[in-house]
Image 1 (cartoon, rainbow, N blue to C red):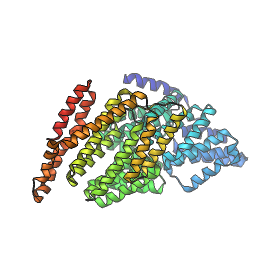
Image 2 (cartoon, rainbow, N blue to C red):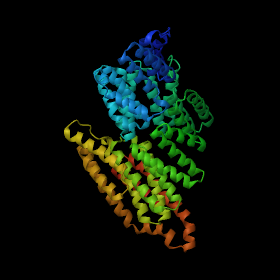
Image 3 (cartoon, rainbow, N blue to C red):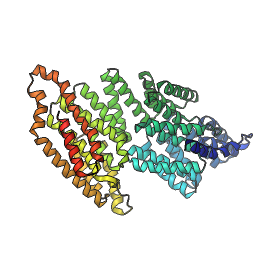
Length: 565
């Protein structure tokens, strides 16, 4: 099967080997070659050709093509850094009458501005990629139509709308291969590979990145596939194949340094994961205007400082990263940042602050799960949710010694799994095009963004209530009934749990029957006992697949008793 797939890719790539680099003559030929190289992500060779073409067009008085070459140069050099001057220049071109009256030139201007905005903050470029998609569709420009869809798919992923993101990226990549836009096809295939690393599936990530790398070897003039190397290195490191991962990483780092591709360099330095490389990535991304990469580097640097025992430096970096994540509105990754800062606050003894952060992380993820399908609940988002609940549970049990709160946290997590079971295959929301559904989707998006900026539990609860109301407008009737059933069962289970003298007294024994000195020593023992409650997470996976309600009840009782040991 793999051989067949590879043969298919190679058969698509072979026609490109017929291209030859005959001597280029005249500014139009220079511009055409620069465009071809830029479409292949070969920025080092495309940029100087754009400069030459622009100069020759200016000498001949061809303002339109001189502007086309200038916009191409801004696009080709965006990975070297985002400067205020470049942003102002592209913004000014969008208002130029010469650009506004020429759709092809307008498309170039949109692309240059969108790439600069994307390198700063992907979500900020959403409107421009929407415009590119509409304009490319009107111009029958299939490659840029597909590229715009791929970029919008990435933004949807950052929004936490994983289902829509996957569908859009799949459609875009297929179109890119079919239209032989292989530079972009390879780039976005590698992007999917990096996504699989984040989803905790490094084996799949490695396959995608290897496909991209094999394809890149038979495409003439293609730029160095940094994203494929990055994804492969991340996958190998996640698989504990450290020697191979570092070899791949070092090769890419050397090329990025030589080509002064600071976007690729900063990301590769983050993957390296050492405090010194993370500090350099932090500095590069900040000075070059890569805001989102800066937040990623700050997050990883905070983790590295924590692991090294430098909690003060870790806390400062984690807080800085969260501030940026709120600003760029990356809903998908914000919960991980909140979890990290909560863990740091707990380690420093700031338990109330840690409690607030864990609660905020759970609320943000609950809002995001509106957009996630059942299969994807098993991926990165639900893993982050489990981390939030386990960390919060440990805090309540071992630091606050609050048994009721600890069990309430577990019941919330277990309720999510049970509701998922009752939803069955009807979990995904409807995608109706009627006005009510469209307005509900807009309101859900607004509420999810608002949740990122609310630190007050009361305000977040109000937003979650609003989100639930809007969610009902998108759900099939069977899903709504299942959700009501889930809520009823969750309430009954919680009542049983909180009223069970047997369970509560046995858990409280770790605190009430010890002296103060023994109590402190007993926290570790209680934590180990309490973490048998983590069998809720494992045990309820068994409950979910039980075919009959009676079987699920028996399995629940078994897991319920086990957690009280």
